[in-house]
Length: 152
Image (cartoon, rainbow, N blue to C red; front, side, top):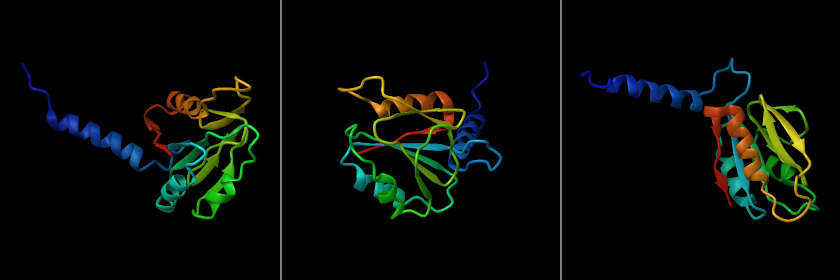
């Protein structure tokens, strides 16, 4: 009986890690980092984005739990602390590296083939889970390139 090749297993692991850590310049969609936050998560988001190295090649999508009537100022607040472009996510917006996309108020956000899609929330009132909704869509779309910490 042959023993498993430990070196081959380690090489596969390091190749997978390198693929996430160092995106290929030929990839059509950069690795996307989803950041979920509650309404009180601004400080955590600022601390995180302030420490992202310039030119990382990553794209960031920020999904925040907010009151549906709340006017979103998050793109302006985050732009103060990062050199990356920070924009409110738009419908059919292609995700680009070194950019931050913020979900607009009173919307759900999905992604397909690296393109963001804005949707009206299914539930008009009550329990809404925009972070969960986007993380599921991202996992289905990006598979092994999906990265998703939860802040706040």
